[in-house]
Length: 202
Image (cartoon, rainbow, N blue to C red):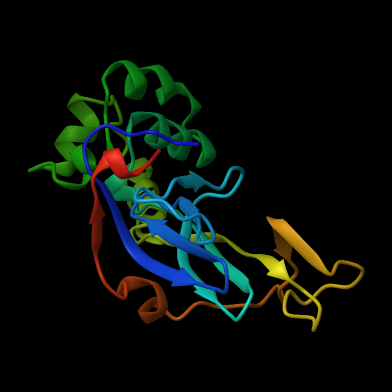
């Protein structure tokens, strides 16, 4: 069960015969048992699933699409920036970047990038600067690094694309093809916005 201060924002709501599922803006899913007759329906968070970008429902089952994105370079915090430079062969910059709190945004928006590399990071070899910029270009944009599909509810007619299970209340991972691709339009436009006061989340 999850409690929160302030307002919880939900971007999508789906319902089946006895339950409603709400997708929160932070990628978590809350379930409400519609069989309970109460003025305040308790919403419980589903544990062990996160980074959900879309939910859907059938008559008595739910599906949830998970998508994990690696941020673009400009969004890198100092730890991510240090890891990036380590991975491209600049291991000696680790402490400089972390203690100097150098971020991807600082590097990308430096007025004079070569001067920034030289004065702030101690990189004074032009070939190194060219290599760094070449590697940065490869990860400028956010990239999807993980996609998953969860399902729960009825599986009597194979709704969850698995065998040996007729019903499950806990979300289970569904196998999907390795070359599965997501159309950005599927996840960039929520169906509607819904804000719920925290007093309604028991």
